[in-house]
Image (cartoon, rainbow, N blue to C red; front, side, top):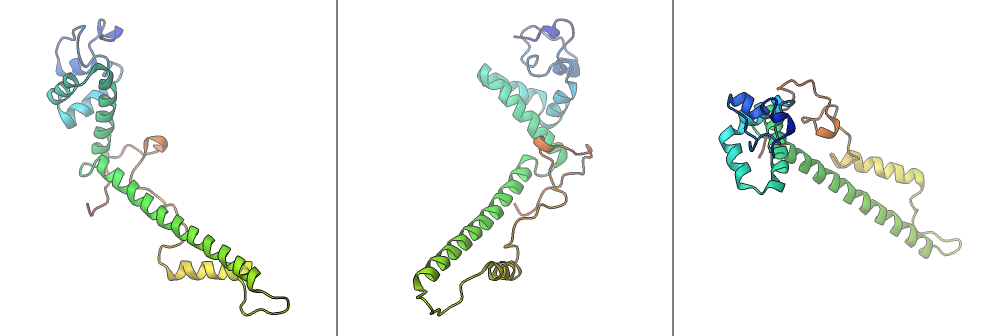
Length: 185
């Protein structure tokens, strides 16, 4: 169960805890000696005994996912000591809500414009017109008016800097003060 390198050198956990790494070490498959910082961070946030208890309670096929989750959470806690992963989740949920509102507004505009085009073509008898249909220029004016009248109702503009760095686009400097959660939980 232990990694092949555990016979030559102890796993990162045993090395940090200054104990002998046995072939049945529960940490060895998940904290190899090549990645000592992974266990240092997990140990700092959760403690070695808590991680040991957690891994012993899980089925062997669930342990790797649990260790990866712990590593992700400790990284989030290092970046944002107050909220951790919850801050990132809250930020993303608010972004989804904001984008959903914009999508709903765009769909309403499409329906209104489509209905306006249909009623225009149905109600126009040859030579008579009781109202003016929206032309591309009028639609642009309507769109601009709506964006000015409805604060934040326009298209979502990406902020210059997000309060969180995500694993899929991590360009952070490693500064612990990069994060900072959003308040109001």
